[in-house]
Image (cartoon, rainbow, N blue to C red; front, side, top):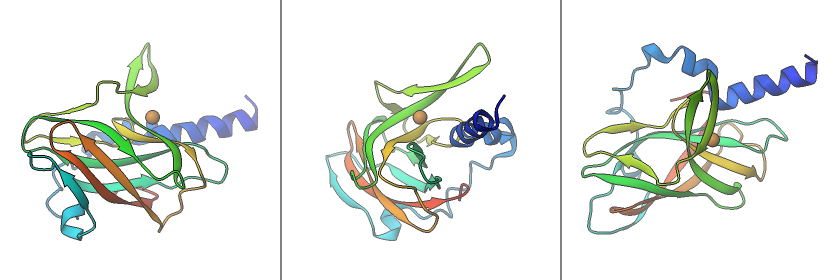
Length: 174
Ligand SMILES: [Cu+2]
């Protein structure tokens, strides 16, 4: 294996969070109470339908290196009533294309694909988007995602409507 190919493999592994996924058994998924929600931060702009908007906690996006065209954003979302995350969007100054992805395993190989039907959000259940699992895929990045910067992510729910959250860029999960 050439050095260039090795570097690519490492970059892809980092993007998919393979290392994190492999040792995520001790993840503390209960620590949502202390997280800053978009609403609490006063940064959310909403055009809600009748249903109450789901709670979003711990938003972050992984920092990317120069020249990398793909990035990912993560958060934990809890809907009060059964709902579905059906779309995600960022400004084209951040990325040209945004999709809701899941990571799948087949024959021991990990890959990812778009969740065409949206991400189901059962009532009262904290659904975690995280490295190695569900994520918001940012494609055609306009430039590197730099630690300390942030961007707006607009999420559309099938029943609850639309909300915009601020996503900070970090090296690791908050
Ligand atoms: Cu993806």
